Image (cartoon, rainbow over all chains, first blue to last red; front, side, top):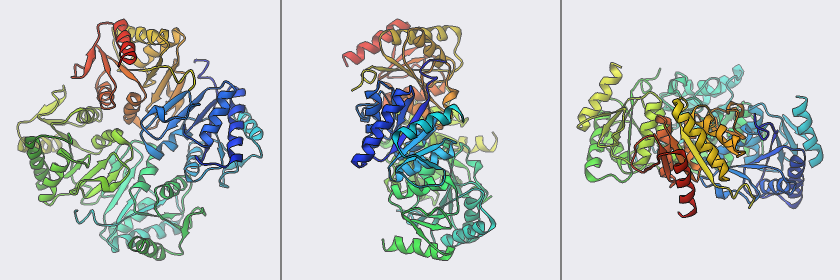
Length: 156
Length: 156
Length: 156
Length: 156
């Protein structure tokens, strides 16, 4: 198996129009994912997705964006590997499917659908100021969220 | 436009393993949908989907089942028009997309994803003993739920 | 199983901009499908799809249109049951999946993808002035095509 | 835009059960894609897909596999970035969508659907012993195919 393949993939889900605080949290989550050698998976667009991708690239990480449209160039500028699906919001299912674990930050109904898919696919979902749904593990900070994610994958 | 096409389409979403009460509610919802001349749309499988389809067929209605697998014959026996998608749970998005309004009965995370998609696509979602999510309009009985659905479509 | 469910489903595939002759063939194919009690499945849009649907409705048949967009009202006016997928051209796979047999009329690359999917899913594909691909069974007229389709399903 | 994002993406499509010669051609195509700094995109499974991925990794390239199933670990061992779709053969559309240009090697009906999608999405399709379809640009060798692909993208 290739070296890249062995890396953990952490999905970051959240709204496209977060406030400043959620944006900063997302940046920090992305940065910590990259610093810990994991791959960032997200929906590839703006808001939480872009902030997290920017954080991950700042730390030299690798970023995958699974897009609703059919044009890979729709992805934000911090996505290394854009995957166009042409499926619209149905792609939310694929974001969850391609993450070993999910960190949800803020977000509205799109994020809610991704949380639901995460749990359906047996992924743990860690929450930062997001939907208070049974099954979401709340975290207090970006650092705690990433630590929880990595710890849970190493000792499942 | 064809006569069938003019009919309202009401989506019934809910778990595949409901209790007896939810099953009876689903049957009643399906029956009332059909009696009011609307088409029942659902996920085509067992549990709430099957009970609602059975109710609709009992009243001579028309039923559409949008299936996760790639075999139309996976549909329960009360589905008139099975639509295989081969998309797995990603088909939840299509159930919402093809309903003018949704009635959620009971259900787990699959239902939660369908509620989220309903709201994303601008459909009203009426709830009967289901997820208590912002945006879900609670109803007390099958009769109230179907009345709310039809009323809301006639006077949006 | 419901009476509607027992009916054979014949998919009609073909381009959205056919010439007059292909349009007339499609109308005739649709009419004969309906007269023989089968359900017409198609991509729901214009051209061959619309002509076949119009033919089927003229003969009192039932028509299903599996659409690329996310709005059921994109369907042509002769579709009874529009199924929106929001998947763009990826929905071509679903047209094949939901047909017991396919009749290809004219068409370009979208039709070619549907022919390929038909064969992948083990459906026979009958051709009327369409791609000359190994595996496509050529027919000389609308009447022959529908007769071949029904005969092949009754004596597979 | 990130450095990885700037790289050309070449899709290699072909059957899962090719003969020895097609396998060697695929390996060579993959190797040359990587040597020229492009990213290899494919369906992620066996046969032509695996041989091309192996060639690309041998030359230190980056490989993306867009899978039919819902488990990223279904990918062959030479895939760096597996993308699970859970869409079955409908994912063929996504392989074409995520390639700047396609090289078809051998292959059966799955490959035919990918050729069709490539042309639908405006991608050039170069053929090596594959379907002789209008629109496919034939090449004589792996080297010619990759040279044609790169040349066509640099001078479109």
